[in-house]
Image 1 (cartoon, rainbow, N blue to C red):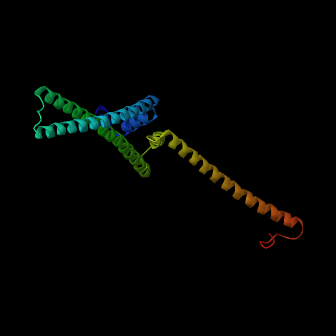
Image 2: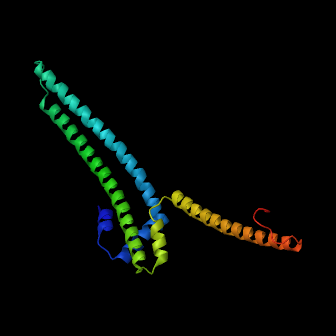
Image 3: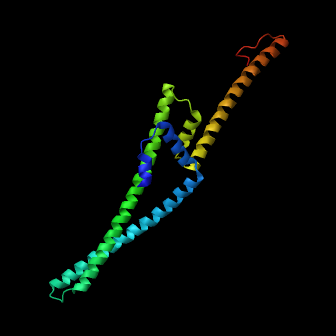
Length: 198
């Protein structure tokens, strides 16, 4: 809940951009996020176990009620209290684990939505021409991406730049070849080569 309140606390754009850039780049925060994911897997297992226990207690209570209907001796007071206590504890654990999982999903979704909002505000400022801090905007654009995905995106961008450079070099070489072919044709005394001769 503290993390959620920190995420939604109204801050100026520059401070919020620095905060989210710090969160996405800091290796300590990355390790904390990794361990939180592992913790939430364990909480999911506990949630499944608590749902299973609630189901077993309900079945036990239904069996006891059915046996009462068949004029069998009813559950004694301390046994009934024990079953009711087990039901209470298993329901409590189920609700706690369920709310924890739900809040973790909300926290993750809120973080992603705030990052998207910051990126859109950054693009708007660039379109309006009011943004002067381009390094921070580049870092913000990379924030929240998985490390492998952002690395591959950078490699694709570099490859695209290499391909564009090679295309420029190829067109320059082609022009140079054409001019040399015309010069060679003139030195042979045949005059300039026409398109049909080429």
